[in-house]
Amino acid sequence: MGKFIAISNKKGGVGKTTTSINLAAALAVLEKKTLLIDADPQGNATVGLGFTSKDTVHGTLEFIQGKSNIHQCIHSINQYQDFIGTRINLAIIEIGRQKNTDIYRLRSVLEPIRSQYDYVIIDSPPTLGLISLNIFTAVDSLIIPVQAEYFAFHGLQKLLTTLVSIRNSSNPNLDIEGILITMYSPITKLSNHIKAELEKNFESLVFDTLIYRNVKLSEAPSHGQDIIKYDINSKAAINYLNLAEEIITRNDNVQDHNMAGLGKHIDEIIKEANTDDLDFILNLKKQDKNSVFKKKDINSAKYNDILGLTKSQLEKNRGLIYNDIYSNVWMYRINEKTGLFNKKYLYLFFHDDVVIDYSLNRFKLPPQKAEANLMIVLEKHGLEREY
Ligand SMILES: Nc1ncnc2c1ncn2[C@@H]1O[C@H](COP(=O)(O)OP(=O)(O)OP(=O)(O)O)[C@@H](O)[C@H]1O
Ligand SMILES: [Mg+2]
Image (tube, rainbow, N blue to C red; front, side, top):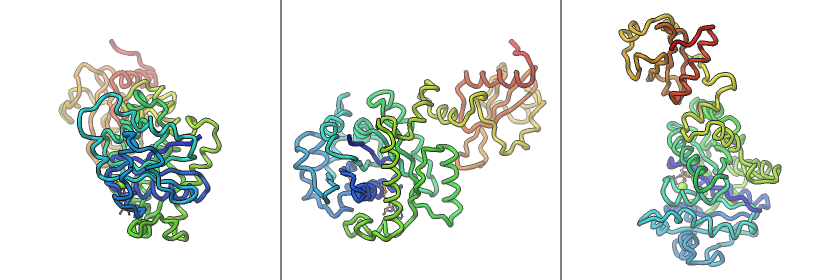
């Protein structure tokens, strides 16, 4: 049975199309029957593989709408690889009045061909409109390319929030195949920093394979070729073959494709959290069972002088922003740069009008969790809850 994988990230220019073209080519080299679908109205994958709008009269739009059958739409690239290209007309999917059933269109035309392929790879647009919703509803998993450069995390949070809501509605089995670091350059500090941040935050969700920055990847599309045809000896070809192998190995090792994606981890977290508040989900992921929040060491020394202060002293020193004078948990938003996720929250815990403990959190906690943390802190200090 085939596996449907979309390459998706709301952020533009992160390597979605490059990954779609070259991963599909690499899977085919490894003798996996693969279908690549260009589902971005920009048609970059179509042009990058040397097709023109004349070749795509029967394209992704016509396929989704059921106006053309699969045989009319498919171009055979080689024995193992098929392709469906697109013209700009695909954009009309986003326009007009939409019915609830509209997000199921792609799924309804893809499901019947599942048994014909090992992998179906879908290149997605950098938007979260009806095309993307169709894609998320139809696929088994997402590969999220993240560029190892500035603003790497932009768009990621929105995408993951969408993933959670799709799971709660049109596709409960949607998984994350993996987060793929693209345009990696080992000599730059920033690339390594982003890699470390991603691994710290998303752990096993990050693919072992890195896609290095390689000029051959930007040259190949202008020759209408994938990287394997363009230069099989390039580092980029090797990177994408390694990625294909990593995906095949993982999927071959499990019987049930629903269990294959690393996103299963996130599924468990979501169940545990019983909320679609992503900040909370990601935060919970980093916590151990006994502690509701993770204490961070950064800048600890700086906040130690807060311990022992009374509410009125704090009010004078730091203001009362966001805080309720009657509550025994106060939260401050910290604006200083402490990492790529530089929005930090300082939680202060009071007993008898005095700060007895604090924690620095990456994400804002729901009020009931903050309350639960206070209980843990009180217990740690051997104190009783005040009412
Ligand atoms: N590993 C890489 N090394 C060098 N250049 C790369 C690499 N990956 C992608 N590029 C180049 O970066 C640019 C953006 O890549 P690509 O088109 O794949 O991104 P995208 O996420 O599909 O963009 P969009 O959101 O517009 O669809 C292209 O010019 C591409 O050739
Ligand atoms: Mg693209």
